[in-house]
Length: 338
Image 1: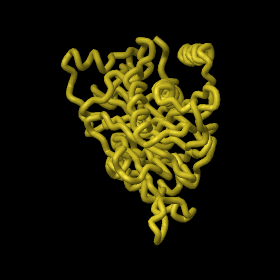
Image 2: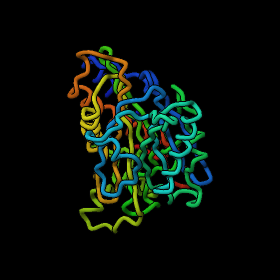
Image 3: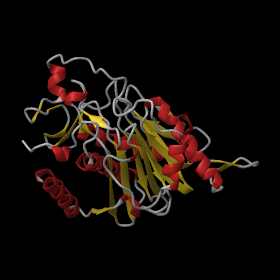
Image 4: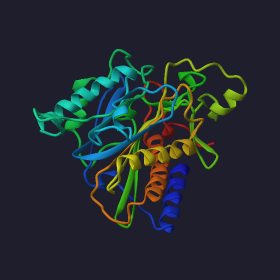
């Protein structure tokens, strides 16, 4: 496929800059698990940090659905998380975090409060209730299953939090395309920085001026684009939310304020790949977690933040390229190259 060749050329460019592309599972101290319900066409994805990870967050969309984000502010006490969950189901999906907490508590993992350990599990949700049965949503049972499934290898595309993800919805579901779960990671020297993202944007996914997925006329095999619809006074988005949610993970050693900055810089990946991004109907959120395996001078915030944005951009593209058609909404692989 033309676009897969384009992706490979991009990786070649990074290689020429001294960057090595690796799998997200190669980052020490983290595991990823998925669970989904194909009746509801929804799911959740969890990153597990059994030894804890210093974490931050950046929320820029106008319609976020989040959990424990205040805890991650630089001035607040707890600076280590034990899991981060991404889920569908809109606000209902926040319930999935309870299952992750239960799994971690059974493993005796959490913040020691003297009488026990409390697992710290921030998270964010996306709106996918237009897909499948809207009464089937991620819950504690699904969150527990995702945590139990966590490992170094995991699927991408229409799985986990990306199961019901869609993009390009300004003209309704009949013009939308599938989003999905994507991952990508870089290594330079000993430092590893990667991204995991569920792509569920109001806007289109663009690369070098070309639309990869978005508002699409299926009969004419032609993109209409969200930008074009907005400029022409296209109808108001009929859905309550969209939202792209993601996690940056590094094996570096960074402070909580530094991880908040890295999360902020990673939002540049959203802005480069999604047009428009950070709208009032998106709840765009990026978490960032550092496992602290690598010490020393390699831990430069500017470098890690830059790599975070690059990795997030590439992870978004992977989520789109791996997405499969569900509930009549076509994946990128189902359409013809223009």
